[in-house]
Length: 381
Image (cartoon, rainbow, N blue to C red; front, side):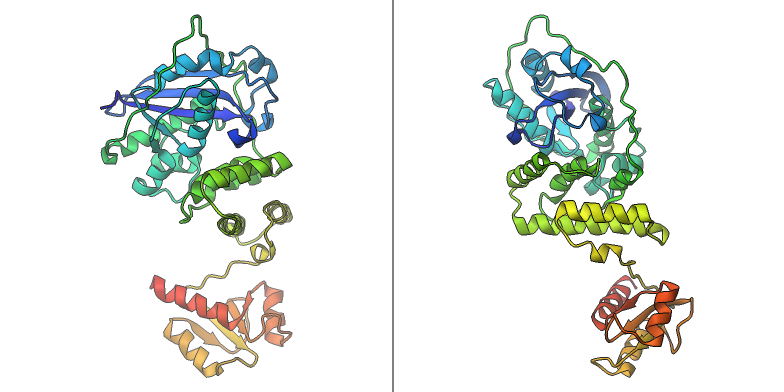
C-alpha cells in the first residue's frame, strides 16, 4: 500500500549517467490516491562539473554554484520518494539518473513506477511521445519546458487523467538519513529560452512500436533539440541504447523512422522550405541515415484521385488500370495539375508525361510503390 504518488523530473548535464553526467535540478510533486496535488518541492543541484547544454535547460553556473550537492539533498529527496509510487514522463530516463546519484552515496533505489509517456499513449490516445503534445491532447497546462518543476507538474496532470485505469504498483523503497540544515535553491531567473522553430517539430513526432523505442527516441529528442550531436552525446546515446537492450539494427531503424517522421511534419503544409530541407539533411547526417526519401514528397491517395500511367510496365497497363479503377481511383490519359500521381515503369523516366508531372510537382512513382499505395487505400476503405 502506497502513500500516493511522487511525480519526478530531473534536468541533467547530459544524456547518460554512464558517461558521468549528473542531475542539476530535481522536482517532486506529490499526489494523493485520488490524484489531488498535495505538495511540491524543487531544487537545483551542484554537479561539480560543467552544466552541459545550458541553452536548453537554462540553468546558470552562478545558480548551480550556490546550490547543494546531491549528497546534501539526498535524505530530503529520499523521504519525498519513499513509500510512494514513482512517476515520470519517460520514467526510464529519470530513474537511471536517480539510481546513479543514490548509488554514488552507497544507497540502492528500489522502484518500478509509472511512465506517463506510456500511460498517455495507452489511455489518452496520445499519438506523440513528447510531454508537450500529450499535455495538449489531455488539456493539461504545460508551463515552461526543461524546467524540472513545470515538467513534474505537467506529468502529474497527465497521471491524474489516467488514475482510474492504473493498477497497483510497488512504492519506492529507499532509506537515506536526512541531512541537518538541508536547503533548496531555486533558479534566480525563470527559464524562458526559445527553441529553434524546427526543434518544435519534436512534439509532432509519432510513437513507435519497437520495444523501448519511445524511451530511446525521447532521449534522442533531448539530444537533437539544438540540432547538434557532440562526440560525447553520441557515446551517451550508445549507452542509453545498451541500457534499453537495443541492438544496432533496431537503433538504425529507429533513426530512419525518426527522420521520416520529421519529414512528414515538414511536408504537412505541402512543401519543404530551404530551411526545413537543410534541417532534414543535418539530422540525417547526425543519425547516419540517407536523406533521399525524406526530401521526396510523401504520396498519399484518396478515393477519386486522378492517376496516369506511362512507359512499358512489367505487367500490362490494362491490368494496372483495372486495379486502380477497382480501388476507386480515376485513370486519365494525360497529366494535368489535378493529377495525383504518375506511375512509371522507371520513376526516372524522361517521357513527356513524367516531365510534365515534375513541372507541376506531381510525384512519379514505380509500380511497386503504387501497389503499396493501392494496398493502403483498400485498407483504409
